Amino acid sequence: MLSSRSTSIYMYLLLVRPQISAEGLSRVFSEGEAAMTASLRELRKLGLIETKKVHINGRIMTISNVVEPDYWTSETEVLLQRSPLYSLLSTNSLYSKKQTEYIGEPDETYQEYDLKIGASVDDFPASYDPEDLEKARQRSREAKYREKEEVKEQKNKIRMQKRSGDPANWSITDTAFEFANRMHELWHVKPWAVTTSRFRIALAKAQSEHGTNGTLEKMMIDIYFQQIKHDKSIDDPEHIWKRFIQQFAGLKIQAERLMVTPEDIETEKVKSEKSWDWAKNV
Image (cartoon, rainbow, N blue to C red; front, side, top):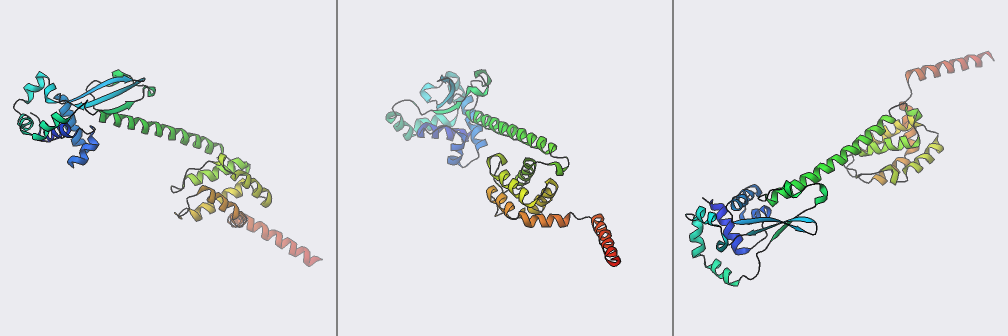
């Protein structure tokens, strides 16, 4: 027996000839796509919607259209002979008018599938739902994106491992990539690549001018990103690195103060006392 919802959908498709999609029908019938997909499957199973595959220009195309009562199979006739659909078709004046006015082939909905991604015709049985195919393609795109991101993340990890030694031995490139990694951790910042910017050149110039090294620069980067990480108005990578270069001298002073240890203080005290003793003996 054909459900009431599927009966309504069939009459709508027969009279209006829209593109057949669960998304479009959900807007017309104010029900979810899942409910519309279930009804479309029911209509296909009963032979009221025909979906077939054809080869066009090296691609597999699916063609879906509503099957008019004059073209129902004998099996469909038997299954629906006691359904309310018969009386609706015989008494609906709009359908009778539509029959006389409609000229040409039924509207067709096309779903394209690119064979380059590795699937064959056999992967999709003749009765498959085009909505399912589109969702499968979306899942495939998402999986490829995740795979790409995982490869990128693995490269970043390898790069970080190479920099995991003593920062005092870092090159300009090592420091630049450390800065890029910190930038990557800020969720509100757009993607940015060190290799496509002038940051390394500016960093090398600042290092030469202020006499810093990897150890000091790492501390400066820590301080800088601690200061800006909660500022959601900053989202331009170019602005972020240029601001870092502008504050380079001040960040160096802050880093040097933080890097002074108790041992350094004690050493300086000893030096000071020795200098004072020497001065007294002069």
